[in-house]
Length: 279
Image (tube, rainbow, N blue to C red):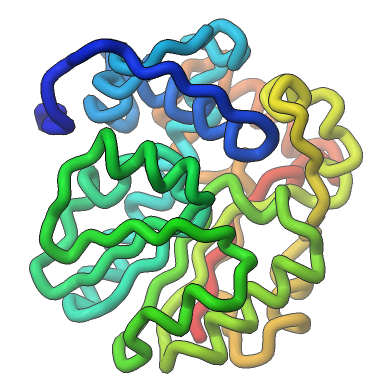
């Protein structure tokens, strides 16, 4: 798959702070992966964008060694998104906190899918500058916690919410209100997201990407019961501790050994998780 986000031009200086700045770290991880011989995601779009942005990429603290922690997660949600769309060829996708991710262009949804990438206005502006206008593809410039934006989206189709690297930056009250708002607004669909448990939130000082961006993590989710209890109408489909995800089989022996060790430590085993619910 070739990158089709336009020719390389003068580099654009990007200056972001706080949670929006973390999208640059995830973008760089995908760009490094795209250039690797054993690429997981094959995200040529990310590589093209990194070449077009004027930024000190070393400041992200992302290297070829730790990039798989991002690309494995993205590959998981790409696969879950494809599974949903295979069953619901006439649906809507709400990609919350999308950053500069190219999921729409990687997944290539069918002609009857309406896809909405939703993020802060400064991020939405960058998306519109870097990615081409495409039928069925929409960018919404809003905070995902703003209660107003869902009203502009049709409510007569199955609707997938996918949120990668988002929930931990929300407060618990805002996060639960967001999930309830989607379940109440749309007739049926899925909620797909990743989360840190409470230990992961307490250990955020160890996360260099978060620390250098000036962000703060808030919402810790210890398991699926936290969601099913707080968001009426949801039903668990899958809950996967990251260290037990299928993707780890594709990584080096060193990564697999690390995962095996982590899985033996209570609390650490579920420090990061993938969640998937029907509603």
